Amino acid sequence: MTDILDELRWRGLLALSTDLDELRRALDSGRVTFYGGFDPTAAGLHIGNLVLLLTMRRLQLAGHRPIGLVGGATGLIGDPSGKSEERLLNPRETVAAWVERIRAEVARFLDFDPGPAGAVMVSNLEWTEQLSTLDFLRDIGKHFPVNRMLARESVKARLEAGGISYTEFSYQILQAYDYLELYRRYGCTLQVGGSDQWGNLVAGVDLIKRVEGASVHALATPLITRPDGTKYGKTEGEAIWLSPDLMSPYAFYQFWINRSDDEAGGLLRVFTFRPSEEIEALERDTREDPAARAAQHVLAEDVTTLVHGPEETAKAVAASRALFGQGELADLDEATLDAALAEAPSMEIKLTSSGLPRVVDLMVGTGIVTSKSAARRAIAEGGAYLNNRKVLTEDAEPDQGDLLHGRFLVLRRGKRTVGGVKAVSG
Image (tube, rainbow, N blue to C red; front, side, top):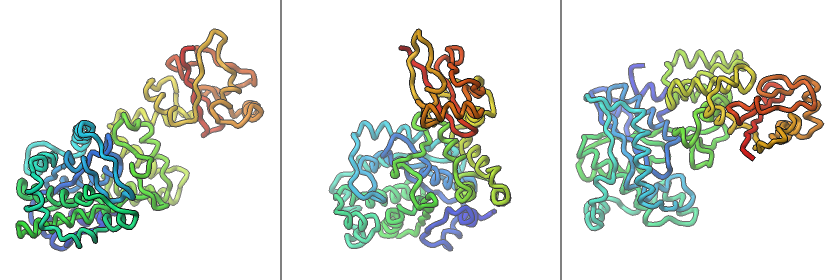
């Protein structure tokens, strides 16, 4: 696909645009400077932010110049979009630390090499911190009719839910002011964001029109949701984080490998750079042979490599295979094994001179069976494993030599039910 808007549409990434024909002409006629914003309202970015980052990367690969804006100012307030109640305001020191973390995360996905399309990183604290209240009200606030602000979907929803503070009500003005400043400083004429941000995006378009008399653009990507309509993201309490200290590469890989057949094709389009022919072929393969899970394997490996690199992806794949009897557990490094077992039912035992508990007791303790009789039955039927070795007797006991890295045991019932044991000093 040579037209970036056609590609975004095919990938399901084009939800809303101010004037698609004008935007297409602008993108076709030369290099466009555009921006996407990331507020430090948490310690890191998640896959909802990754949608925007990869959309920005696609635009950059098409020859356009990205600006990554980290909200050092707006992060102190918080966007009311998608929120049913007022945000808790984080301390300034916390927000400042998160700004630096998020700067580093954004930088991983854009190309900052010198050149006409080289990315730029900014914080809106640069221009907002020096803005006095009087200047804000006189020079910016006067361009915002209150009736139009009240009509914004994010504001209407909060008013219906019980109210909104002036702090969060003013967020749309601050975001619009960001667009105006980037227009003045960098010639930025396109803002990209999620569809839940649409009111804020068009507020910036309107402000530039009123102040500068210029026509600029906004483009919104859809919210990526599960088949049941719920969001993938931190607001749902099950964040899929991009930072390895917030979510291990193994857990990240497992999230993608466990997507359903109905999800996999759409996620391949959004989160990978595979061309249309390959993705459509993977979708066909999944329909014809769902047990092979071809689309899910490509999805998990591509996205994990994109976010964590090929080495961590290889470790995650090896751990995923080894836990289910298709590789050597002893070959896994300690950190990877620890992360893998953290995703499984597990228990902790104390190392004592009396030795380790019997396998039957460990199977019950980890929860991979419901009772000792069920554990004995699994052993008798040949379906119980300790460190991928079949358990042969009901009274089998592991010894300290079985402890992987001196502290882990891996139990398995059948092919898919895994439990972990972590031994600590008594």
